[in-house]
Amino acid sequence: MSRTRERRAVRRRSARPIAGLAAAWFVALMVGACSGGPILANPRTELQPLASPAPTSSRPADPVPVAFPADDRPHDRLTEWWYYTGHLRDRATGAHYGFEFVIFRAERGDFPVSWASHLAITDEAGDAFHYAQRSEIGATADRSASGSTGFDLAIRGLDPTDPATAARSPWTMSGTLGADRLTAALTPAEAATAGAPGGLGLDLRLTATKPPALQGDGGWVDFGPAGGSYYYSRTALTATGTLDLEGRTLEVDGSAWFDHQWGDFIAIGGGGWDWFAVNLADGTDLTFSLVRAGDGTYPLVDGTLVAADGATRHLDRSAFSVTSDRTWKSPLTGATYPAGWRISLPGEGLVVELTPTVAAQELDTRATTGVVYWEGSQRVSATRNGRPLDGQAYVELTGYR
Image (cartoon, rainbow, N blue to C red; front, side, top):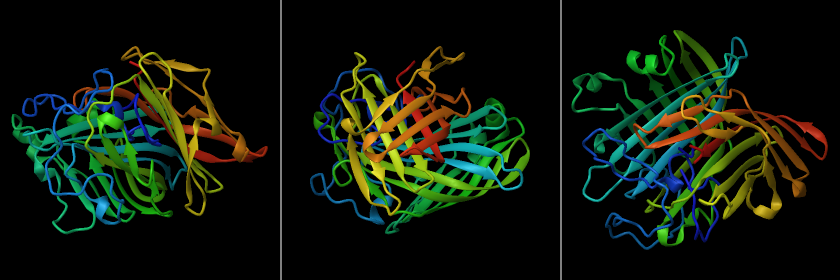
């Protein structure tokens, strides 16, 4: 989503440059809400004040403290998303899979509320990557009951010009306080487009094992004249359920990372960013953001460390370095992406090496969010004070096309 981002006058730090994917430098624009066009897009503009008014309400001025479970719910804001990445293991064979599942919500003036969703599965042993996307207009995608403490979202990809879409099984996300449920199944046509004609889907239950990590300044990220955002992460969730892949239903378990971000921001401009989420075997969770300006410089570089006991602290750019000496060129879009990284945190005695499990983990989501990005699972080789340390990781790359 971000799993899209940059800012020249950011006053506070954010672990996932306006997180998720198609967000931060998102310029989430409504492009013909009833025309079937993309509901989010990211033309490369310089930092601008908000181009449309925020939804009106009697709420207090930002920022206010993030509160749980109330803030798990959808908000009356210009932009919002619920974003999962994770790692699954087939209990029968031990084969490993990565997944990304995200729902975006957008409010734009008098247009109806608009939604987009992306689902991606990385078959690490099979060296294959499959993804699909849906978009929808209207409030029916939000099934969260009035007064409830969690979120309950359902995206069918309804298209008023195609009655068949009304019969689709929805892609759903629901949860509260870190007890979440994800379900998604592609239609035969969607599965064929995704390169998995035998079928693709998942059904997962997630449980957080650490408290939410508040990003920025106590959960608030100030973008200056571009607006601001509330942002928290659940960096460690256990996952159990099933993965459907090419006619096979696999019993899986694993782990996941969740980002929830919302606020009155649209245009933040820029050259894109690299975002890293790393879970190490000693219980340390790390996230890093390298946000590029249009001239290739990095006006924002920062990170967050979540300790095994859940304690969170921010890392400024002097606390770590990220380097890459390999690339991968997309045969579909022509974009050239970094493809392997070395992350060093001298103060922690940590060195983390990341290598994509599958080279081609690029998503072309111009039909729904207007962006092309790379988001994929990684092989992790780490050391702490010279001692080997296992781990898992996801990386998101935007702005390379």
